[in-house]
Image (tube, rainbow, N blue to C red; front, side, top):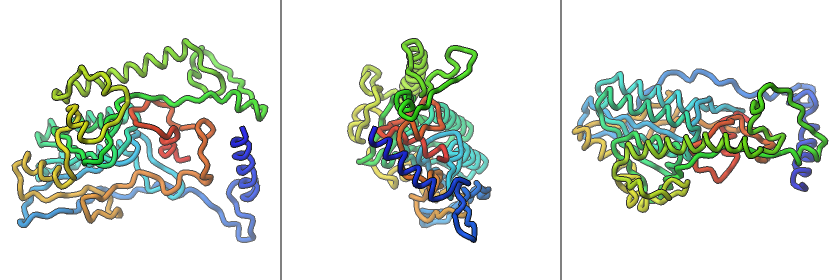
Length: 344
């Protein structure tokens, strides 16, 4: 409990420094700090980042999927974030509407995210692929785990860098029991509710066996859905490998041996594969991005993370409780990872 007391002591000092009226500086000029509003950053623009020798009208769309996959704006102080699910759909719609696009390279660098967000993106990618009839190659960068791998299974081919971490095919719901910690500060929960499990998972009391069983049943159903998606889209994966679905992660070579990916290589290899599959050797690679985002190479990213998520740098699981009370397809050694999407 010493660490908690130290945290509250530091928090009290900081609050006293900025004053009881919020973030008004105690100066005659009355400087105010306010989170910048999320502004409309305009429509998508195209930037050619890899040109062949000829100026062919054929194009390959390079779509980046980075960070936490959620269906909510990634906001915060000085935010440049967007809703990852919404911007992904916007990019797919742009590809579908332009006949010059002959293939898609999906560049993924993500630990995963919300179950529903990952499933929506997976479904949207499959729908676009069927409607346009163009090949999709997924290239996994640093991370392609959980919901990010779930999304990658919608591609025709999956390429992973030699050092990529992939897998993490499990489900998690982060819950915390803060009853004893709250009692240290004489804080007692007094909810008024109708329905025994209206506050199922609340941190103010211990989760009973029946409540845990209810949540475990949902987690098992989500897990079964993940397994079914892999079975349906990855026929080269041996379904007898039960251990592949216990949440463990793999380096690329082992993932290849287990049938979870199709090749070990680099982003350039994924682009070359997409050109071959599309029979478009002269197609130029185009990044779809906001006009204010730099896009001068194949590694360009559309930001979906806030510049700063909190005025206070400390993060304590439970006290800094997630605003995403949701089940996650994610490889999550850090339990406060999803706070990035909460604008905290």
